[in-house]
Image (cartoon, rainbow, N blue to C red; front, side):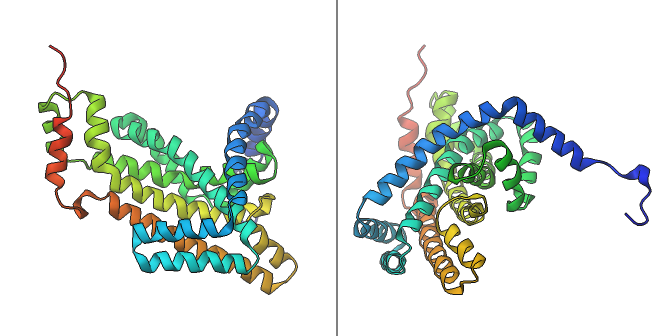
Length: 303
């Protein structure tokens, strides 16, 4: 290393390798056990999507797109999934969709409670925030190295990498949404005798729902990006089609896989944005009345 004195060199690579080796030798059975619940959910969703006739999936996303984002997007969803089937990428697309649904499900199951806890504890948020910063600034390829060493290769380790990569937005936006809830609404709930749990369930979470749904949108898109990268460690799906096309210098195969990913990404993104608008109370009339109704449903504490 030209110009750098030897005593300034830090063996960071050896430190990292030592930590990973210790985790592999001491905790590998625990990490392998973590694969089981994820594999069960992934297998169930994959088997269901591959069992359902393709036209039923097309109709489902067409109706979902119509109800959330309008008839134009419903038509776009129908055409997009029909094109994916016509290009011969249906099975790979359903595997990618199963990876997305599995990853987003675990991101929400873990991320929303962490976001709630972060909004309630400054101490916990001060610890969690730099971890999230590191997770969001780390390149996606870097996640593959420790995941392979701890969990092996295949689709399930790829899902684990996707969960870790895509989780920060839902944690951050859940925390942000809960912190931005109007203090007047919380005080009104307390005036009606709401307990801490009732205030969270009936006031804070409903008013923070637009921010939480925005976190869903961002998590979904990040999971879709990572679902392509994890093909490098043997995960199936459309990413594997692109990787095979690049490896064989088959521009047509890579292009078909890339086009299928783009069509799926646009369809899911518009549906997620539609869900954000539906969840936004300010976009619907009668917000004060609905809030008052929620407050009146709170039972006062027993005397």
